Length: 397
Image (cartoon, rainbow, N blue to C red; front, top):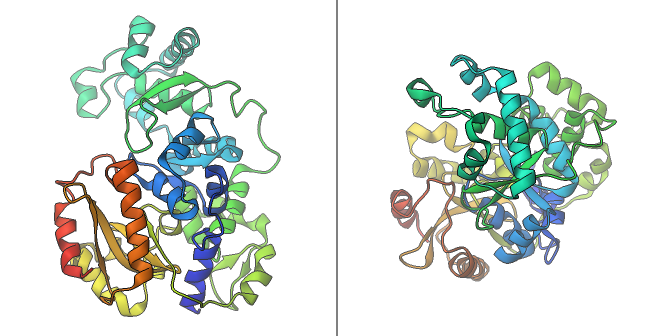
């Protein structure tokens, strides 16, 4: 398969070609795919790289419930558009039982959690947004400590189990205490109307998810969708069969929705160089969990040398730093240094490029002036990323 065509097709389909400039956050996520959220800047950069969305506009969209962070595919949190609130909750519903299984070994019963859930809903209905400490105070002895044994297993009280169950049911939603998407301090509010109140959709939710996935990321493999959805082999086959997927090329395992096949065949890559600085969890790579297809074969050796031989295999699935893309091709990596107020970057091709300089300058201003930092995840910090920054200086940029 022509890798240049494939990468540039993904670039265009993801809206990184400029076609989503000034579009709303919900429209961006409908086109590009759900944005993984782990307390980092991923959702902000996903929106900014495509539409130039400011931090204020992204947070206003969350406050207005036009987009929201929800437990979704595999039970993991994603920022999703309003049209997919119910879908996200449905496909994530079966993946949130791990805490309850742990608690059951400590003597916690479903009836106990159900009573706690009822107390939480009642307290939120009376008091409005409450953080976990506020909920504990409002619900009295409805929740309890799980003691030293629970602490050893990472579960100190029964409250997180109830909060997770209520979120999965669409009864409550969590909102960032200061409105920001790049931190993990939340309050909880009752969700009315519950997005699941209308009952099950006519189509199986995983069929709908498959339709979304191949619209966002096709040509994609069934294995990539299986990873994203968290389904087993048999359930994955059942979810994709109704879609009527067609191979991008004869004999290829990369598949498309039939309505995209003609456009794919007619598509010709090329044109002036265009760059985008995206997050390490941008949907273009993270939703397929694949980095290698974005790399030119000539760059694989330098990339794997950067991530280290002990991480070479995982490095070809997950980006080690934020990424620089040129029409879909991964050409470099970057991090932000708050001390310098600047992006530190490295490229596989050391030649300077005015278009790249402009993209770096634009993203630097956004991070410096609106975000203040560019954490990949909640525990990322300037100190923890300093080895990556130094490695980038050695990569060349």
